Image (cartoon, rainbow, N blue to C red; front, side, top):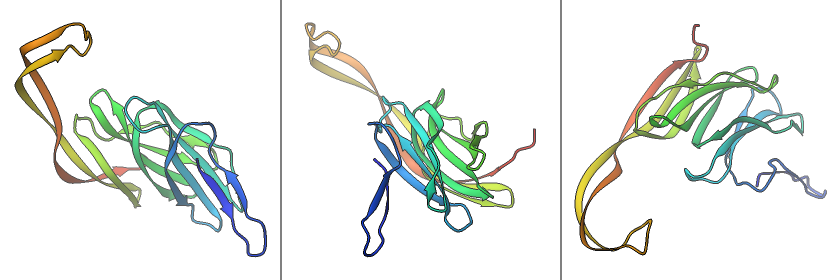
Length: 200
């Protein structure tokens, strides 16, 4: 759960819950919007793990009041994100989401005042995994740094004795099986420069 609290000396503490429902809320990021008491809160709602669909959520804050929660992206396997202010009350958000090629990076912009979200731009398209996202902006561009690991596949032949995983009543006795093992390879640091408002 996400909570907002105000502590004033000599007064009772006031608390406000910022998320809703029973789903887990994680990885909150508070992004200043350039003015006094103006910010946006972005977080992932939903349990971690590929078996769970997750939502990317947002709330705006202005002069002591929070706007209603907005679902930015839903029904997606979002593992992490990074956000940065672009201009005014507009944010650039880079997030990792499952795609047809594996986990890939996408870019959207979100206008907090208008509560409008741009169409996503896919930044990567490969079976490698990306993590440790960090973003900044410079002269109309999003500057993105991330760590990428290629997926290394190894084939092994093994001898197995025991029950079948799908049908425990069937027992193997010294059965020879071929196993495919996938694991992340060595990490590589990547830097990516992407226009915030690409030409049509």
